[in-house]
Picture 1 (cartoon, rainbow over the protein chains, first blue to last red):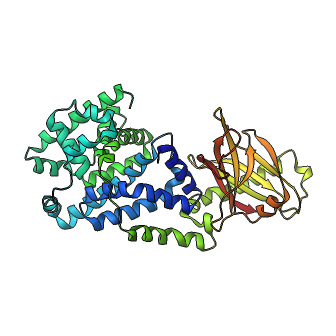
Picture 2: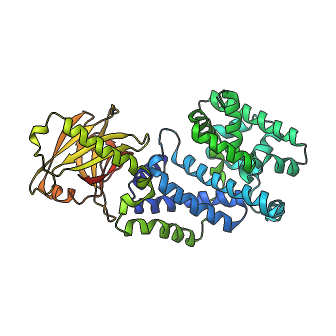
Length: 185
Length: 238
């Protein structure tokens, strides 16, 4: 299903068309669930994130703006933000370092951030531009994006000082932006 | 002004989208986001740049209980009679809408065709808001209860231009989970009217509201809205 078809489904959701919403869910939920599981690292949390995200999509379909972002981009951002909110909140308040332990215990049949980077063929220009970054920049950005790590968590995971990791990320993103802007992405 | 510096906006938007901010920083950032369109643009730009990465993740089917939970949360809205317009989406803007009914009445009363409207006649009015700006965009009104053909008067309040090769199509939303029904194509002109055949006219008084979608020239090829919905609003009897 391409972006235009998804846009049509979203505009029907704005008309409270439940059948269109169901079709949208059937087409997008597997991708979006993968995003949620990847970040939260817990199926139960990911299910909650997916549920809340789709309610959010249903309620805000009328405000979705085709000109501003592609449907999948918009929906992915909704899911990522929900997942990150959930991840950050209990982590800082309740479960402390559990998240990292969970991460360590995730069996490694799921591809690592760098493999994912290589696999994102659909991302075209983005991947081309990622290749222009240094290895550390690539790794820190991919870890942050796919695994939902904060600056502090990244520093611990990569066993580098916080300032160093922050600089990798900042410079990496700057370079990425320059490269994508030059390609008009 | 906060975040007046483009470089800073860009840097923070990138961190927000990448997801490296702490909970506290995210919350503070989101408050600013609500108030700052330039910051929202910077975030949208970064989402566009980075989100394609997520498409690399292999699909993962969620258990069916997730959809069941979602469905149970959206169902009650349409089964209880408030239907379409009982949704959060509508109530959030209903205060605007009710203010606008007054405005629409004022427009009609002050309008040049006052002499043609019997003073005691009820009118049905739909004030349609632009779904993006939330501002009133169009009103549609008619005299209810008559049998036979019916003239529906349309006022386009906003200044709008139709992209070449597209058309505006007006839809009746019958409610109760029924599909939208086309009332026909309209123009961007300030004042216009549509003549509805009797079967359509008969249903119009019971509709929940109206919506306008952008369609290919000649109207929707599917008989249902196929393009983005720009304006919509509930039906109100005055």
